[in-house]
Image (tube, rainbow, N blue to C red; front, side, top):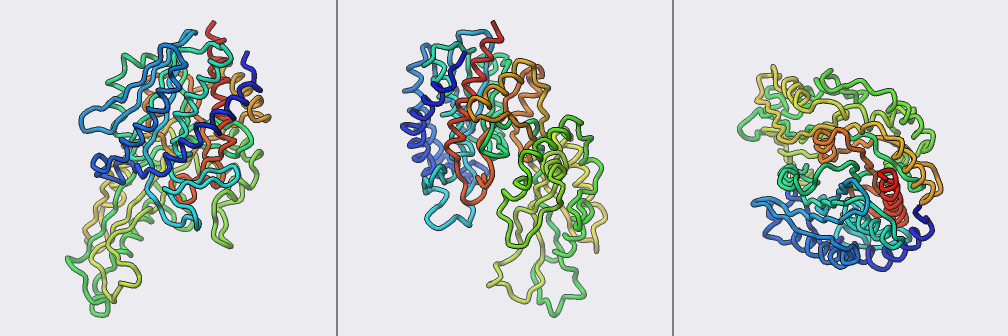
Length: 473
């Protein structure tokens, strides 16, 4: 059996001595995902991170006899780090993370920044440390902790991709390319998710899908004086506002199209109630509300279900408008809104996309030119039922590492790889977890890695891998 005290001491040493310094250097590198840096190859930031990660991993893998590491590079695609560690127990474990980053965003606290690593108390600030640079280090340190205690584990495959923040367009090609070397995993560990708090291990039970696209409304071929045209030419913004009301109730935020909804499974409703009982108002107080702003409801369990099992719309970008200081009295020719539509985990993304496109484009007011271009869509993921051994292993890992029971909750974001693996390996067990807890603000300003949680998550994974080996005997 694994010794939790030895594991905790090992994690303290390797994270403080090696991993946190490595992540500090990683944060400094602006290796934005290809969707946000089309010239990523020319800039070289991705290659620099890959070199940094592989140098650290190769050195540590020398302690794991027979291990191998390869940087796989298919033509025209982002690189992928592929690590194999032979097992001393039956089975295959597939562990996943990514090393590409979201763009900078504005609003960072003075003295911090996306590429300026700052450690304050237990938090390492900067882009990518928590999402998801820590993952490879957590996976390797978990295996090393088992090695130190002489404990068995199954064969382990670690896959670190470089385009997750772009929707993982390259990953399916790599999974097919490496299929024979990966084999059929009986356990998948994903370290790219969130946690409801920093007090216990959180297992992600579902992930939402998404449809992302641009809604463009065009009324003129060029801008004209608003005093001359208003009242005769309809505002493209007003038309866009009308069209959005076809798919979303602006008063409540509830989506209107039946194709966007699914029946919420009873067990996910129960888990939402349990998570709400654990978190209380922290369900919503974790967000940086402006003074006086209230959440979209007061039932915390329903708020969790809104975030995890119901469709929601966000406008994430606008084109066609100057900055306020540059805006003259001009009725503008077009409005483009970038729509980010989150779908329930079991909702089919393609019918949802088509339903939204039809609702937005059919019979436009005033005969305006309307187009909804949605090139990116992904299905969600709902975890299979836990096998008895894994249910016990999760409970043990959380109690040993955190001193509190494991908790279960869906996440509102997307990890395309999970849906892909769920389809490819329907009998596989999944441990999807992470360190993105309250205020950690992935994708936004002031992202941070909560260092104690990262250490405990790595220790928990070591414990789960040890139990996986035991149950296979």
